[in-house]
Length: 468
Figure 1 (cartoon, rainbow, N blue to C red):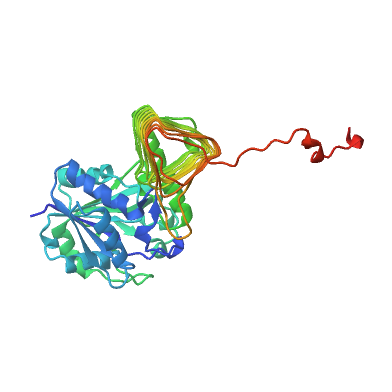
Figure 2 (cartoon, rainbow, N blue to C red):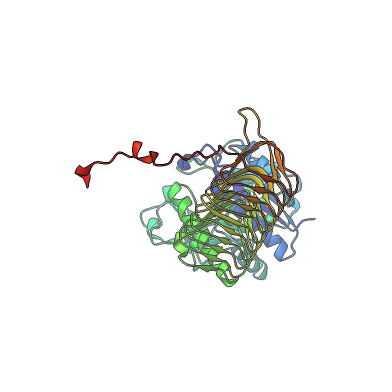
């Protein structure tokens, strides 16, 4: 039988966030807000080798939340309960016990909220350790808040304590600065004894889970000196503050692994991004999604990387944009390059300034140095593409492919009219529009013949002595 039932309260609509999503699915640092609470619970079980299941108590957007869980957390044991009406936190926990048949058989129940994304397994572990070592029935995490408006106040007694919500507090109680965090660890038999007896005799007419804590019970309030993990997210401003703290944690950990930020406060980076050792990140960079950056990569100012991988010792020059692309080791990209979905840049290749690629596979040591578009193409190793090159891949109805072999030279201002296949070791003269395949070793030139008329320039150059 599992030791722990970990309950995440995730039924909120989040109307103050003004998003077309249920509150638990608010986007945060490359994840959803609820992923952080769920991740903390999963970390607790795994790190301490404790057995248990995590249950989400859902309400608004139930199907959307469950779909996200199936997609993101399919490798973790989780379950869900449904709170039909949002009439209080005690009612949410009742929904858990009503819907999960073996919930009452789990020795301990941990309760946390989906909208406190900064809580980690460390805070959960601290509460569990105190509950077990002191043989308490329940513990609640608290902290001191200088401006406690909106929080439930902690009223301590010789034995136990109780919590008074803001709306129900007296003027004297509102002066109390120790407040409730919403994180609890309790013995399940303690909950079973009192939960279904709770009344909604308060100004909100809700069933408060906090009413489980009373002065004459074997319960304890545990004050944490650092209040930051317990910050709740109810508004866009709260969301931004939480993201800032998550980013600060991420950057601190990255520094420990040898990542250097030239201006950390000017970098936006998702939790989902993996950074290797020795990476250098300049101001204005944005790194998002399933991005992997290898060792000793340099990202100059203004670089944006989304769902892409950059292998070791590569350099992405200023203001380049990469999305769903792969850059192999020791390559150079930019400045001002755009690598679109399906781009693969081979080892030691160069993508220069104002080059755009899309569904393009470049083998090792390919050079596309200036002002070019390479789309729906394969380019062989060591081929050089001159300035102003274009793959004409779209005929108005369908996309077609350009294949250029290895060790070829494509002159400046040339176009490949796809579908077309250029063999190995070919040479295309500058200014050519190529619409026929070339075999290995071929030379092609396809441009109008130059005609020169001696002395005729004066007929076209208009000069004025007034401007001399």
